[in-house]
Length: 125
Image 1 (cartoon, helix red, strand yellow):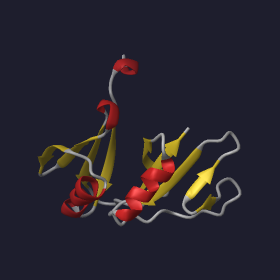
Image 2 (cartoon, one colour):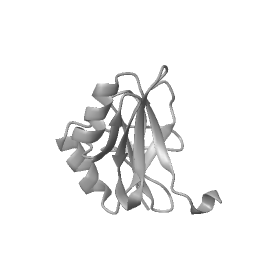
Image 3 (spheres, helix red, strand yellow):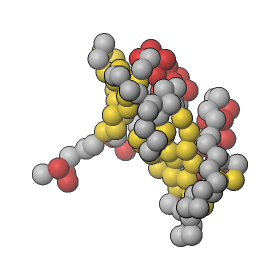
Image 4 (cartoon, helix red, strand yellow):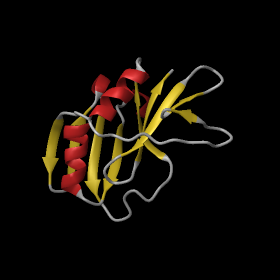
């Protein structure tokens, strides 16, 4: 059944070449496959992220993929050094300080937009 199968995030893009450069060069994900219809990138633990061109990319508000980390501050700093800007939220349920939100249980998270306007997250439990 599916509980034993790997899963991968599917990320839409409007500019395929720009998105491939963002995920490969800016985020540093190794390219596993690059075809005209989709590019597959390798992430940790055998997971994968696929970028594919489609209409309507970047039009949703929710997070499309989240990377788990043990050192959120380090990841945020390294991504900032690569030109990534982190989102700042001041909502009743989420407030960030310097791009990082802390929940009442001690979990911490940060979010950024990819080159296509999609929201991508980082989380430290």
